Length: 355
Image 1: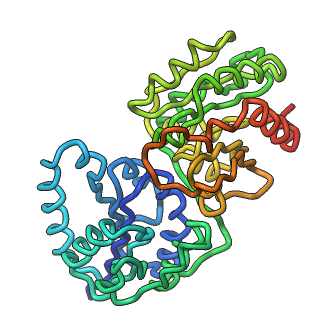
Image 2: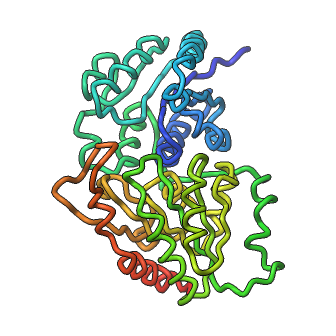
Image 3: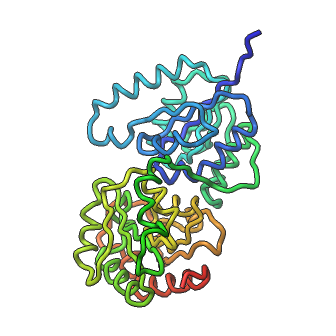
């Protein structure tokens, strides 16, 4: 006798950091529907990491970043959505918040095209009109985004567990980069500190010159090995830091896949980072963090980890939180000094007994 499985679509068309924050919610859906066939529709950026999650059966890449560069990808999106429509899902749930009218319109079109018996989503900006089950608009207003997404998963029938967010990497990445941290590879350095000076928005990036000054101070005080991290298209940032430094560093900017980056971060004694996807990777791998926040509210977006594992450096200004993509002054970041970040790093290293 043929057993019919539930067919579930999880929609999270967002970045790598958002996928990591949603991992607890997707796992809750697996717990609630242990025998279901779970599909995940996410950004192509996040899809390489999503493939590693054991509680997802199928991953579909949505070319959201690519569409910003070329509208021809719209045809790929249409083909993808009509392919998913044929799946006839029992349940479709959009885990991400709806924060704008244009975002609600785009997600509304996607959900109208999907063929699903039950549709779950955030009741905001009109999106509640296209779903059958909705969570209140205020859900994403006063909760950390990972906790808000978990409420969405619960409303869809998910069963949360006591574990936190998580991330997995391909074993090939471990084979490629383990030499950097191998005990068989003698090193004069006491600790390994990663610096991620990138971020998907320029107004989330602390000045690379500040990072260079900070890196030199860390080498001089802690005899640290500095590993510079930067994503595709951000190589110039790590190169700027490397050239500005008086001491040597390992520049991995542009050399790592997302899987590689995840493994490298998992091996660090400390990661100093802007508010970004690598920050959430660090939280998921339980790597101690110093996170530098600019326009976003750290109450809602701070590293989702044990409080002893991270320190947020942040200037609270009247103009925050801010959704502006470009800013003439970026005081929220420019007012943060090297001394403040160094003190936070010293404190975190001391608390983790890494000195």
